[in-house]
Image 1 (cartoon, protein in one colour):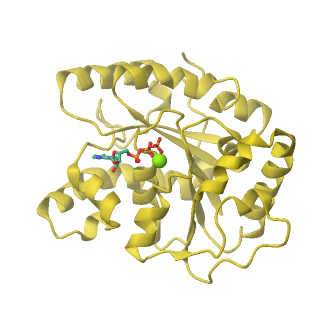
Image 2 (cartoon, helix red, strand yellow; image 1 turned 90 degrees about the vertical axis):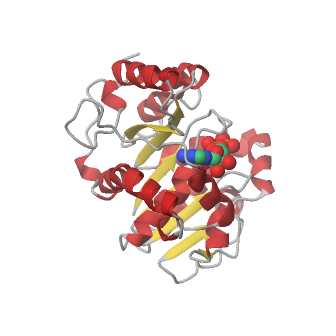
Length: 278
Ligand SMILES: Nc1ncnc2c1ncn2[C@@H]1O[C@H](COP(=O)(O)OP(=O)(O)OP(=O)(O)O)[C@@H](O)[C@H]1O
Ligand SMILES: [Mg+2]
């Protein structure tokens, strides 16, 4: 099982929407998928529950850190969800237990390793023990970003934050962690966003995800109301009746396909040559 974490301490950048799209897409490609929602807001759990596609575990995600007794087995299905719940909020308030929490989370992933091909983990936007435990155990991390100034300024923190910076985690806790890269989301064709896209490509070139040979051929997700609708209604984007949804799917499929390829053929990931920039 390859474990992919969606992570960016900036709120509202599209982590949960991308996690949902990727979970459905990987299932569509025949992968056995375990989705774990580490955010108490439950924005991965809700659309997956509503979709009726994922079998929901009998326990919530806080139990992955704290359960005293062995957990009930996950549903014997190729697509399972461990939903988020409010008890996740309490983990950060027990610092003496953070190391055992992280260890227990890692043991859970090891115990289900043969059951699934890919584990997709959505995280909360605050840099806390949930995010650290997920990154400390993961194979890969993908960071959705928005192309506004504030979010762009946040990229450096995402990489270098004292506690949850991806480079720090890789150096100190998890040398095998591969940074798939930055995924611009909710991209709009405004001059401001276009200029920011150019800037992010220049500054973080090695962290952009190539989907072709052209100069601007990097993975990204446009802002489209049908993506928000799919998220709210639990619909699978490419199965929606609207023409707009099918057009959107055609636009984003190359990006999701590339990310899915990288995750499933994880050995192919090399540390980007520019990963130490900025
Ligand atoms: N590509 C998109 N186009 C249009 N709306 C989008 C897109 N991606 C996400 N959204 C919407 O934007 C809002 C924020 O997205 P999302 O919940 O995925 O962000 P997040 O990073 O997970 O937020 P949080 O940090 O709170 O967990 C949601 O209402 C979602 O449906
Ligand atoms: Mg979210």
